[in-house]
Amino acid sequence: MKNSRRNALAMIAGLATALSLLQTSHAADNYPSKPLRLIAPSSPGGILDITSRVIGKKLSEQLKQPVVVENVPGAAGILGMQSMLRAEPDGYTLVMGSSGPNAVNYTLYNKLPYKMSDFAPVISVITMPNALVINANTPVKTLDEFRSYARNKQGGLSMAISMIGTSGHLGGELVRNRLDFPAVTVPYKGAAPASKDLVAGEVDFMVENVITVAPLVKGGKLRALGVTTKDRSPILPDVPTLAEQGYPDIDVGAWLGVLVSANTPPAIVNRLNAELNKVLADEEVKKTLAQQGGKVLGGTPAEFDAFIRSEKDRWEKVIRAANIRVE
Image 1 (cartoon, rainbow, N blue to C red):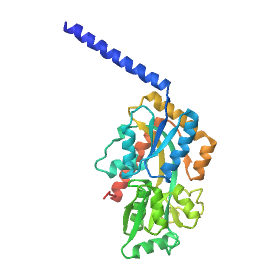
Image 2 (cartoon, rainbow, N blue to C red; image 1 turned 120 degrees about the horizontal axis):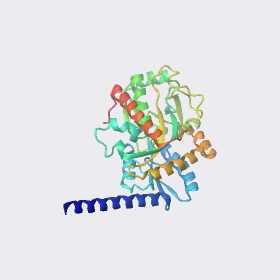
Image 3 (cartoon, rainbow, N blue to C red; image 1 turned 45 degrees about the vertical axis):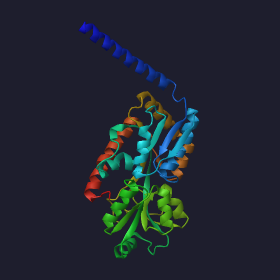
Image 4 (tube, helix red, strand yellow; image 1 turned 135 degrees about the horizontal axis):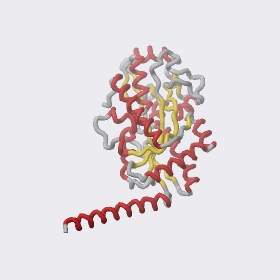
């Protein structure tokens, strides 16, 4: 009797598993059958928002379904990550990930409401250099002058950051550390409001993605003192790198990539990857992102996963060595 009951339970479990696989397969075959949501964990106007809208528009054309970009700013990108993870893991809610919430935060924060294994990487989207910028009315024109100015200004400087844990935040902390001057960190909910206050003179400097600051530099509202990556930016070609100016150990750039819930069916993850690779291969998309200073990437989910893990390890060493802490 016990064996019969055990066999019956095993048969029911097997049927349930088969039914679940059949439903998953059916869902993947019919994907997408409704609009998608792409979460940008920042306020409008910054790199996350702009890139999400460029990618979302083309993806919508390919899938024949609307791709709605939703801004969920706040808490260093954490709120955007949580918003995606609260949705059904069916491939209809995506998030534009970045170095802060998806690599750096694991070391910066003692506790996070998510872990790396909660996400399924889909595809690397772009990399982009950052620039050290100041208000155009600041009485300095070179990095050396800025260092003297920062060291001697009574009360120290204030440093705007678009979000805690971003490449701009870490870049700014490294600049402050290497140039050896005091600064108070002023966090914002995105690059747009941070740069707006810098233009208004409410803060003294920031390190931010060129996609945000280049128009302000070219418009004479901000002054760029250096690019924080090894290579110069093609949209700010006259601005020397910090490495060229004597700080070769400062190499901080931004990266973005699409992620979904780890419970998303693999077939849907692979479908999204294939479609997004097509998006990134589109000449108009590449041209638009290049004009904003971004280098298009692409690749497989496994490659993006390996990259994220390497970034986590890299920034863990930098953060601990520089003693960077979230107050």
